[in-house]
Image 1 (cartoon, helix red, strand yellow):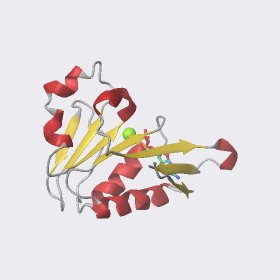
Image 2 (tube, protein in one colour):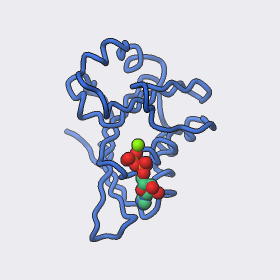
Image 3 (cartoon, protein in one colour):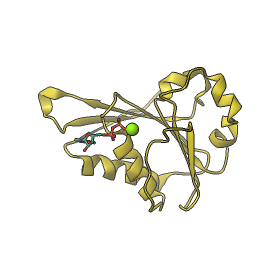
Amino acid sequence: MKEYKVIETHSPEETFAIGKSLGEQAVPGQVICLDGDLGVGKTVFTQGFAQGLGIDGPVNSPTFTIVQVYEEGRLPLYHFDVYRIGDVEEMDEIGYEEYFYGEGVALIEWSTLIEEIIPETAIHVTIEKDVEQGFDYRRITVE
Ligand code: ADP
Ligand code: MG
């Protein structure tokens, strides 16, 4: 049975803090899928996550590559943004298995685009807006 946890945030700082707390708890080999529409706060969450791992430098979405590697934290962070991926075979070409089943933590923005290669054990984080709850409201589901 799958377990869900729903967290509601009302500012970017709160979403950052949720990411940070998960980053502090991250263990080697963990795969975290991060999904939600454009502008929902995936990058804010990722920046918190990176800080939770002890990465101080700027973390932005990898624009020209599918994956960006950060080695300076407690564990390596493999930050994927597969938004622009054409075919899941591109993941084979970059050798994704070394990242998904390695010593670090893989965080994948837009994971649903590569659903077929996501490990069963992955943690799914979904961020959603709800305009009725206010402009800065976000519902974060962790599964
Ligand atoms: P994505 O990476 O999902 O496209 P970003 O993290 O780049 O989105 O941008 C999210 C935007 O939403 C930022 O401008 C941020 O300040 C704003 N924002 C407002 N409220 C929140 C919230 N509760 N959580 C996260 N971001 C929020
Ligand atoms: Mg982003």
